Image (cartoon, rainbow, N blue to C red; front, side, top):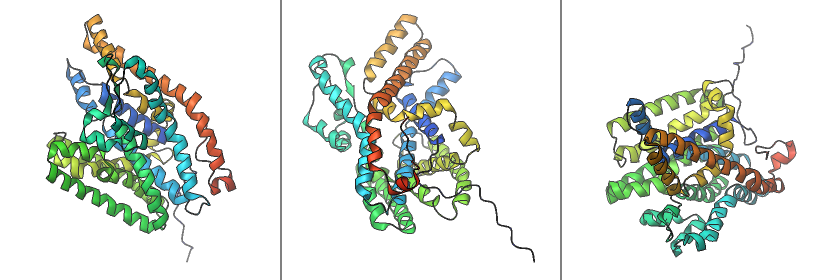
Length: 400
């Protein structure tokens, strides 16, 4: 009897040191979607422009993609470094070196500009310094901006910082859960249970507060959004198991089925505060994006070829700074859009000129910020290497 032929594996289990450049392409997709949502409105005058105007309204999905991707990467790091000598210290310091510098730089710059722009700070704004501002901002949306007595155009918009608050809260709590539960199976079950809990909490919130109030809390608060981050974590755990190859192959179906169901929900229940969108819809979106992430990991696959394109990887590299900077002075960019429309008597041409200028300038600011400011902090990661990085000299992140 001939010996059994071992089935060839095409995707081996991964660890946190495995770098997938195409994931930067996914970050680019996310930031393009968010930018389009915030600045792409007003197009009209034909089927194409009307379609683009309608499509950009779903750009908020870019934040969901960021959440799932963060959960995937962070859970992988935490699980793979459980036996590290200084588990919590190294994780929190490394996260801080990546996240804090430009976040606090923004507030420092706004404070320096206060005598000029006459910004009206309130004590509640201080909650953003400890990544808790989303709770007050959901209660009173005016806290998501810093008004200027000089001119409304100079208003500083920090409304998009709610997502940074949600992620940082997750970063504070999830490492404790991972360290406590430790085993892959336990973490997998906990992530599923908490994801289901998020759906239940959204349903209760919707029933209690009604659609208008529930929408602001469900979208912008960790207890209601933890399933996106945890779904990413579930994918990370599955791809570290013995069936990684099979799971990775199944990701395309998770993406296709999840996307189909998402489109159906949007079509059948189009209202922004629809219970179908807010309760099961957010979880389905998270599953679809987990499928997209998993599909992107296989070298040579269709998703990999798309998101490994160099322009997307370059944009994705600077996506964190781009996200922070792009909406800060929104009214300045809207004023430019209005000026272009009045000058050229064409909304379409004004949109092309103003939005292109906005995108390019924001990208350049993000690149300069990374190259000359953020990278200085990132180099300190070498002092907080994980044990497995030190032993193999293989690093997940390299400052270039």
